[in-house]
Image (cartoon, rainbow over all chains, first blue to last red; front, side, top):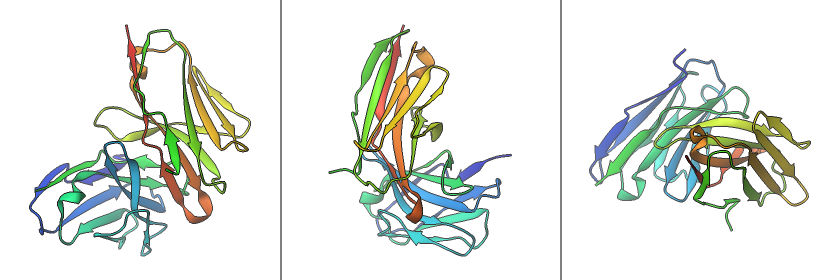
Length: 111
Length: 110
């Protein structure tokens, strides 16, 4: 099993560009999450999903959108990137909202 | 006030030392508690869940004090491989609100 995978691993964007981060899990987990991690801030929840076709806002959802069209995939979109969105993005999945399994992260820089 | 607060450290200890990390949380509705470990530039991984009665896993002991809204992690006989950042995590399961502390960095030296 690959567990949780994220693509891409690194990306540099210019202000105003858009992009989509892909998260995939092969553990048949119902719950999936997107976090961002900034120095000194810990991980902050952006959006999450409790099942295929459902999404909900987390602590810092502004500037991001998500979709969960298939159970195994959770996409995070940035419609118009801003320098404040420079961060490390982690995806996670969970069988029931408790222990979370994280992907390796995506390092995004917005110039 | 942050919802989950940890001493950022860094804690620099010699091999074999005992080290304790503390964490406080503000939401009294929190229902599950965890310690995660994060190595430099890697993803967080679950170290252990924290139960009301306290729990131990080898050299690691976790304690929960609901009345004081306080969680602790004790590492005995520190190894070089314990060097990492330790994240305190609390979850309000009813609304799936998982909150992470900023982490405490530990360096174990020979």
